[in-house]
Image (tube, rainbow, N blue to C red; front, side):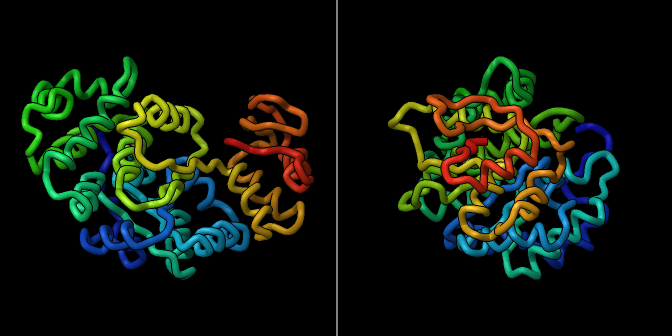
Length: 311
């Protein structure tokens, strides 16, 4: 692990009162709640720097959906960065979420095993979802691929499935890759993709229960590719990928944003006034990359059939 990264920030005590970390509570919340919104690092940073009233529109939507927020340990590592300390605005944002009445789960990625254990009876079945997710995700260029290539034991366990009944497989895999976290890699997003792919197989859930909020186009592309390349017999439920522009359009459609200034406040967060979105405008026949100002996008969002933001 690169110097400075830690899965427990030095100022954890300031955050701890506002989050859920116990395994049984995490499992219960994920199973019981209607929606689970997983935060990516970049979007969390952007939303944490919104004004309180602007961020409240996002929180109101999540609350309306019967949702919770989930922050995985690798994402927490990235938020704390090299200093190992969470910025005050990050702690304040989580406190605001807590005070809004929305649970925030901070979970180790291997905790997914406990969630799956509620639904499946054998370690082999639960492990098969991790094995298939990693196999499908493993490509020529990724942090996970690099780590597996350097760790024969882990490769034997997860890729070659030499011990499919091993109850410790999730812990071995996720802890090993977290320990190899390096500056500038995409490990947080890659592990989110693996986690969401596994959770999408929980039986009885509706499409769209599991969501990721990310403004990282590369990460969104990897997640989308992982789900699309999985053959039908191994597909789970569909997930929803929210970028901040897509979220702004949803908030306007739900009448949580009522004027242009409200929409602009969300769109301008973390941008220089210009955006590159994926979507379709009126009369477009196919999805395109659209370079557009925040001001113009706000106008199109407010127009009937003005634009459909995909990402």
